[in-house]
Image (cartoon, rainbow, N blue to C red; front, side):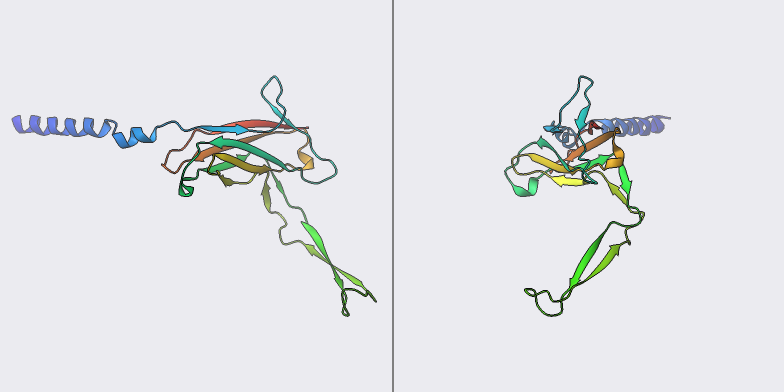
Length: 180
């Protein structure tokens, strides 16, 4: 019985030692700066508003932000981005027009247009935001956001998470953008 008690006490010491916080874990819990800047007008409910360019299929917009600056380029912060919306390429992504001129580029004696349709992307899902970006050394972050016309009046949620060179992962920041 005495041997069992000694083994049990050693076991309890081992369990409590495993659960105590180590200095490595707590050093990774340092707070880093991470902020997003939608670069858009915001309403009283906290929603950002992006006006679509109705003369184009996609509207391009840069979302910015900031993280801690670094002194070495190997310590840049990687930011992962996600969006609640994507679009699917239909029967063609577009087309390329080739102008055949067998003689030279200065005299156009005869031209025949040869159109090639780009159809091999049919059914491909296209996200509305780039999936990752790196900070600059001074802490600036940027990504491109590109909703399409058929997303008019939708509310798109954009999420971002920063992964720092010391292994710290930030919380996920979200912004909501109403497409006007």
